[in-house]
Length: 384
Image (cartoon, one colour):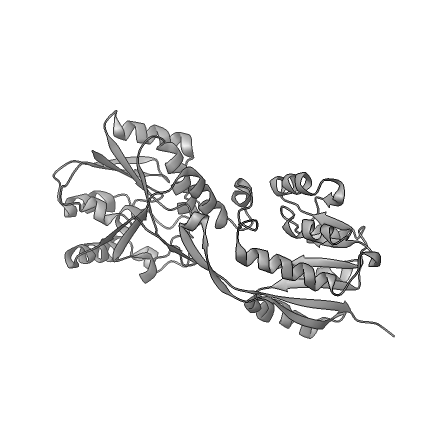
């Protein structure tokens, strides 16, 4: 069996897969570089130093445009490397926080359909993975890895690029790998996608429907809102309703909800879920502030002010009450400083909705820290 290592950039083969290159059996290894579509052949029997010398010639300058060529070009490279032989594919994790590597890992797994695939845990500071194979490097292998970095990747040690910069946590002394079914890979990819289109690539990417933590958070948020308003007070405008986990709960309490969601796949699922029990709109916060056409008893900004939105937009919303929920750190760094200077808003109350917890995700493949949620009810200041 030959080994095929599919990576975004040539140095990744050393950083996360040196144990494959240094396998004592010294089997044939093919390295596929997604950014250049280079196909590097490391013949059987070659020593590690020879293999590293080949890879060193392909280390490139910092390039934040480096990207996966996509599943089909990668599939062609994999077929060429395998050439009909038994092969094993190694690649990045779909949940690697360096997004280019995450995309490459997902695409390579699709490209290697039919081959056994092992993903490197790689750089994933927010997730703890349950790995299937751990390979601690010995002293000589660590020395070889560090020498490669210092000789050939000095520009990456000095780089400020979040994607390309190298530091201790990105040069592991133990290389960890896991296998995943297609559904697990998709969920891992979506979990780390945040606002980009990948987040909506699977239904319920943040597992609102299966997570005990999220159920507690959503139930507590619903109770908090229902304890301050009644359905007779008027409609609630829920900004960033996603797939409707909170919308449905509020509807069950008798509230009329105007749910807004700019992401098309999420909005389609939202419509399918709430039917005619809520009105659905494609607006984001910016559009709602620019065209204040949805007056309501309150606006709901629940777990969505994490992405640098201009909080002064709240001034234009046609309501005197805004319910905000965020993790405590975001409240302290985002909302509290804004409230200190806000001319039109004040915090009427603050309530802890759910405490932090550690929770398994993606079918138990990994676990992470859920950071808690605190609600703040904002009232518009009266003038005169």
